[in-house]
Image (cartoon, rainbow, N blue to C red; front, side, top):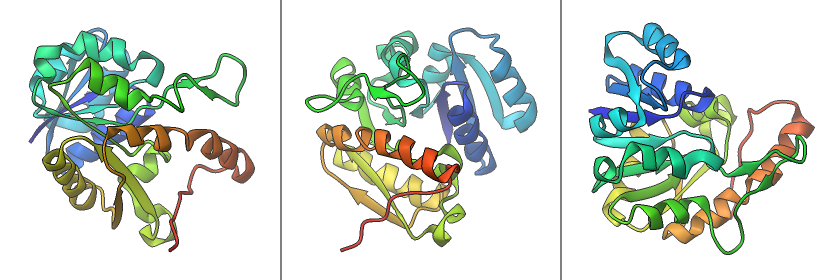
Length: 216
């Protein structure tokens, strides 16, 4: 499958590398076609890896992963192009965190809205699925790093078929065993608002290798 990964940071690098390892063709997108980080990533991952602008990647991908910084996601997706994202599944991993007041971030949007909802409103013909945003990127692609994978991942979105496809991706490509469907895209408010407690737990544990498990 041809997949677009938007963003050249740690999350984009990790997700893109895992997808290449799964046998997919992956194009990493950034603001410019000559991004240094993307160039290094391509050299590291071989012939199934390529890079270009956000628009190049979005046009290329049958499925798109948004791995950009949440505060810049809408701008990046606009650069990717409404026409390039139309009718495609967009897996939104981003969190709109504001670090302007120190190392403990607040949320740019919360309570009555979410980044996931903002993206869905801006791109009504795109199937936005929010998931993978409640953990460290290494755990995203390897849940067995913690408790033999005995913990939970959340997803939400308006399109039932798209959620089924993403559930299969999470299970078959990334190895997730417990996937909790929270419902429509408004539930991105809840998963994004887990980030403040995640950051504080990271400070307490001094390690990103932890996750949430729902016990019933």
